Length: 73
Image 1 (cartoon, rainbow, N blue to C red):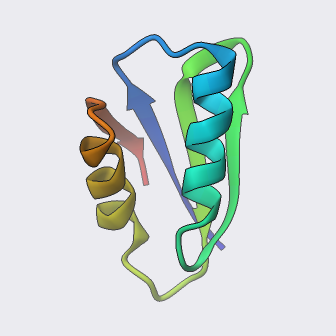
Image 2 (cartoon, rainbow, N blue to C red):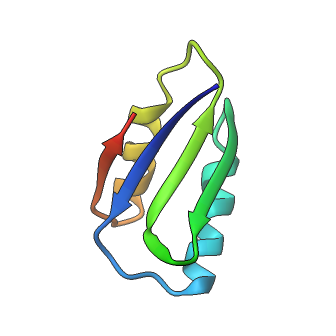
């Protein structure tokens, strides 16, 4: 299992975070998405090996009008 941690510049409310989590979980080969209640700017996306999911995640977030940065991969 691989994962990336993404920092989102925008402040999102709980409802927006839930929608974002649900959207990310629908991406192919994504196995889990976690949002830390204490650090709502951080998004952890776990995905299956052998797939280039980080670029897909970043593209999807950009299309939502967000400004993400990959913290770790």
